[in-house]
Each structure stands twice: as C-alpha cells, then as structure tokens.
Length: 121
Ligand code: FES
Image (cartoon, rainbow, N blue to C red; front, side, top):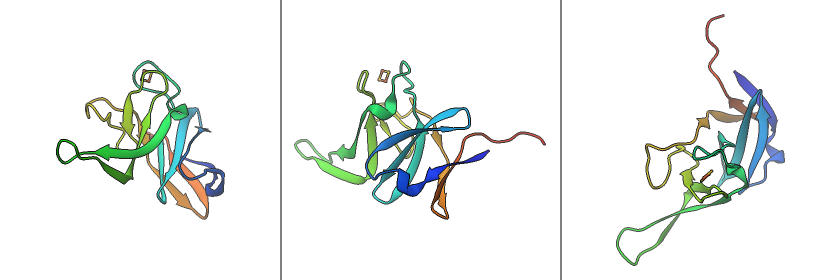
C-alpha cells in the first residue's frame, strides 16, 4: 500500500521526522538530495530511533585514517547508541541486524511511502 505522508517541503534536509504511514510509524529522512523511509522504532529494545543523531558515515581505509562518506547517512539510536545505515537498514557493526526500511519516492512534490504489499484482491 502506497501512502502519501506529506509534502517534501515538510521534511527538512538532515533530519529524521516521524510520520504515520497508515498504522506504521515511519521516519522520513532527507539527506544529500535523497529521501529514505525507515522504521521509527529501534530493533534492539524499541527505542525512539528517529530521535537519535543522524550523520554521515565514517569509514577508514587504514589505521589512523578517517573518511567521511556524506552519501551514506547513519542514524544512532538515542537509547544505547546502535548505529544503522539509513539506506540499507543494516547495523554498522553487524549487517545481519537490521531496522526495517520502506520503498519511498517523491511524486509531484509529495512523499510516497510503501508500507505493505497488498495480498490478494
Ligand atoms: S533501543 Fe536502540 S540501541 Fe537499544
């Protein structure tokens, strides 16, 4: 089911805002011109994930090096600091641990989130 969650102008760049998409709490993130939709609830113990810090991903090619990957936002849960890749939903420390992500697109200035696949007719 595709749900209109608001005008793109309602979602400021660099923040995660929680909206209701049907019965699902979804965090809408605008980052470097892209739009993402993630679960608003942390996988770990149900913390308010979208109240956490949103930042560019830090990587390192070798010891002592630090690279900023501005194309890959990461959100850190405010309760215990677990960090997740906003695009994939994977935890930074273990890609088998994930938050839910949702297909999202902008159409005619509206943010459209797909929360569930309709089954049958
Ligand atoms: S509830 Fe999010 S890290 Fe623990």
